[in-house]
Length: 314
Image 1 (cartoon, one colour):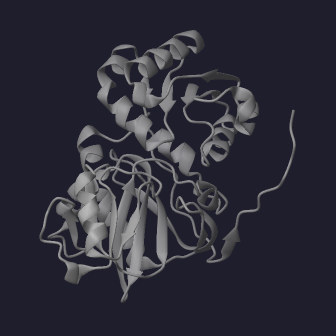
Image 2 (image 1 turned 30 degrees about the horizontal axis):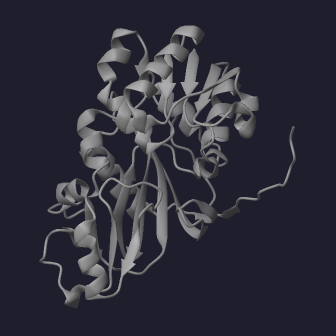
């Protein structure tokens, strides 16, 4: 297949491109920056510089041009904002015979809106929820401080703030599309999860995040086979009717896993799951081409850490 991978400067790009090329697929890449700025460009057969996804139609037209030139069959986007925009233009790609490997409009409407996600699982006894308000809801009082404030459709911890005072809370009234959550303290668990809608088979690979970057990318993690968490993830995946690979984030407090986020894309740490021997990337693609996902594998609970090697390329 001829596959277009977007945002090849993202942290998941190298793992995704390598897995696809290993299976014999021809991978074209694109990004907002020049090809020579990214190592991942060297793994692609061709790389294009495209406009920002937020430029909407200009971005879509650029992708369509790439697809025409490279005879692209499939597009796999790697960032949330690109998924948001591509979802709006589904019909145009479908009419051109190009397959978008993204979640359904219904699933995205919940996963990409943190308040909608909270409301969706609020009455679900199998999914503990953190008390959440919209920022313009004055029910969140000074007694509830400290609290977390973040954009309703934010990504990678962008715009996240810890609110300590009523004055800080008042300042949020000028910010649009923010939510407030009760502040809970505990370790973060990230789960790479893939589900095939056609067969309802799914696989979850959880990890406890020990060291993270400021934007929430795991650097040192502990793989875990926690069956309670895996069962909870499967329940969430079925309720949202997930098709393909996504990642979920949880906060572990008082023996409960509180759902924080459902990110409808590969995680920045997808390589951790890949190194267990399970191919999330190929399983993701299979979900969209009428094939089943790889069967679940046994993996050893162990510590894993990313090492960044300084290498100068020209």
